[in-house]
Image (cartoon, rainbow, N blue to C red; front, side, top):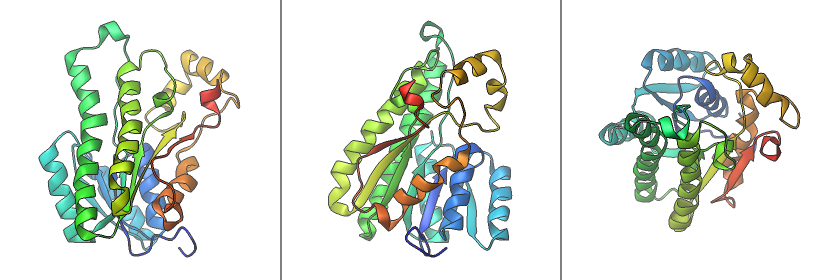
Length: 253
């Protein structure tokens, strides 16, 4: 890819890359010329994605990673830099959700959601940021938050809490690492249909929620492509510490 959003010669690490938004973001970065490290727990899907990227002459490599394991995070960052070169772009996308009323969440629910959605992204950003500082080349960290960081929705209290924390983490790291030429920004996707939630949108509850959206429609994973490429490329060198909704106005409803 040529032009202002070209990522030729740069290495990107995408977590949660096996399905949904992460898969689409990995494809988008690869098409823009980046060498992409694909990280997730499901290696089989990552291998298939790497093969798909190779078919359009992109380069990608799978890495097994449970983001709750800090030692595994450090090992993957080592492996990515050894195999693909210094990481210039981190897309902190891995995340999970448990839907329950607040009074029904268990300690196990809390640990699962908080460790995946907060602990993992924090230690990934730290590990990659340390390398960016040591190499002295700056970089781009893109944290994937959510519309629910900006507005509440029933039964997703833990998820919303963790995504709000990610937006504040974004601002803190942007401030701390500005002197190292590291731009840190967050995307807050709205409701986007993926294979994991498609069934919900066909249910009565899903249709009722959809009817309240200003444009009464869902997004597809590729609606994030433009903003992702902007934040990953040199065109965002003057953008840091921002939290950007990409939600079709859904936060207005």
